[in-house]
Length: 160
Image (tube, rainbow, N blue to C red; front, side, top):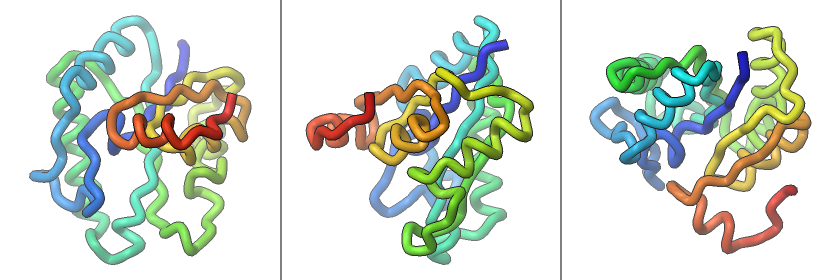
């Protein structure tokens, strides 16, 4: 089976500068759930890799993060799709954590846990750090224009 890695906020659901801290704040981007369903039905393994520094900042706890991800899983399932796993990094940028994108640690964890190679695996994100993490592991970075994607594109300096 083929593997695709998606960022969460700005790719699957609407993003917020105030962070998505509660399930009520999680709202899917129109078409995203159906796109995941099409991927699933076409034989893709869909995995989410997301920085969630709201946890590290004390803006939400793990129970809230789990409830948000549960809502996402349920919505994707109802649309006919499946997310195999959600990988997240709760650390802030200041921590310089190896799991926090743009560092590739989360992607290495995906490869190890799912026993897959990430060479040329599509990785969809809306920020430069999403694309940099994908590039660091030899995956294929894809920028979407939802979320922060248009701003990311206009800033330039995108990895090839």
